[in-house]
Image (cartoon, rainbow, N blue to C red; front, side, top):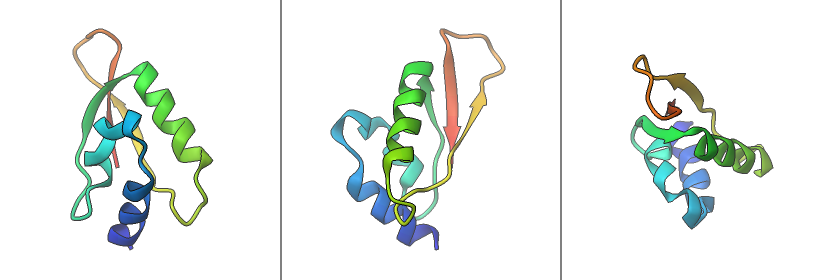
Length: 74
């Protein structure tokens, strides 16, 4: 099921969220490091998609305190 959902989601990915493309890799999702603003933009965009295009991602805070970065995984 992942390749179908990831493919649909990736096809809809706007240019401003191109940094998140590894999350919707067709073979296997890969983590990305992003800040809070990017995370919020990605979640808002995912929430706006029809359910047949949505994929599930989650945030994982990095152990080292850095400039408000988060790691997203699919």
